[in-house]
Length: 211
Image 1: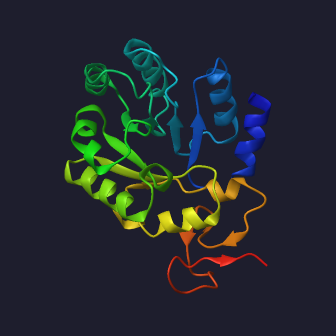
Image 2: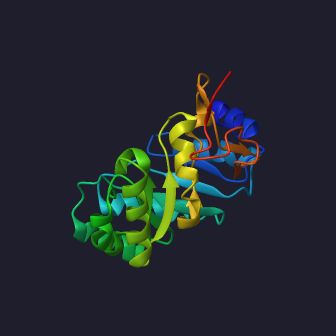
């Protein structure tokens, strides 16, 4: 709800980029609420497969594009959407489109390059560090922008993903910040800057158990 949106945005004031989920009937009200308290902060949009058809997706993206501080839109249509519809949308979209549910492994890169401007790679989706590295390298090889994302997870996987940062144009590694019972310490995100400078473990994934 808009009142909750305002509180959440204020609570995240120290972070340089925000990410907003869309696809509900409250999108316009939520956007107004967000911009009331953060009028120019860079914003990433995640539709989570919300828009069923290409015409609806284009209409919503055109509406979002009126905000000049939006960086890109993630997964505007379902992963099952025909490739021809994705190509149609990519050709017309005023904002970059990133594939998330549509991109899992390195073998998906060629098709993704036809449909998207970039892709979101998550260790949960790829199954670990090595396939994530392969997925990132394959995407970059075919000219896609890359983002490393995460689910709601502990510092173990978030820290592992942070080690791959040099392969990404964007990072979205905040899953460990959204839980209250993380049993591990690893990468920190002070003011949105990912760093291992304060990690007590200096080797491997630089993860230690929380005392």
